Amino acid sequence: MVTLTGLKLKNPTILAAGIMGTTGASLVRMANEGGAGAVVTKSIGPEPKEGHHNPSMVQLECGFLNAMGLPNPSYDAFLQELEFAKKGTSVPVIASIFGGDADDFLKVADGLSPAKPDAFELNVSCPHAEGYGAMIGSDPYVVEEITRAVCDSVDVPVWVKLTPNVTDIVTIGEAAERGGADAVVAINTVRAMAIDIATGYPILGNRFGGLSGTAIKPIAVKCVYDLYAALDIPIIGVGGVSTWQDGVEMMMAGASAVQVGSAVFDGTGVFGSIADGIDNYLDENGHAGIEDIIGLTHEVI
Image (cartoon, rainbow, N blue to C red):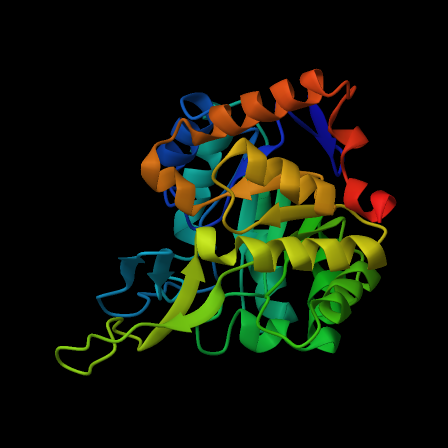
């Protein structure tokens, strides 16, 4: 059992936003069949959004490149899905929300609150949605304003998902902490691009998108490491986590839990596999729990 921002998780693995979180049924499946300790919904916004035209996702040799563009049915249409997820599983269900400003975030948070999500995750980090995500999440003043607005309006924990596409992620993390965030999530995808050499055209319909998977894990580890040294709130590590070794590495850098996204492509059992591997590692090395290894690298150097 892991306690994170007051929430009880059966293990430290969490389904990342945007992966199998479009419906209540898929969220329940990730928790009940996949074994995730908590699940995060698809990012939900104030108005229906179609997203970018296809191709919107491609598998590369080093991970996945996507430019979905935050497609969603809006909070009104998603409310029933969130209620279904809450009723169908006993694990925490976190609502990922986005908007163009503080008013948008408040509108969505208030609109989804009747479904009683266990926490909100503020998406200020999507790298490929015009007017949303990283476009506002790169400004510490805006991040602080949005975070404070939501924290003042809801009575559940608020997590802020940070973008790595900035010069200094710590500055953004500190802004979220000043705004009252209960935790930060690091990181979202890294801005990237792929080109079809037969035609010279970009492969993605949006031309560029966000890279996820194994290739970005070292970037995520460094971001978590830097944030842990500067913040007093928990950090949830995400980016390239696919094995228990990845989970342990993230925790040694400073993560209190890990989110898993792209690795679900290989099977929903990845959550249980990672959790069991971490437990075995702790037992074999004489640790009482994950608290013994969170931030360990900061102590040994």
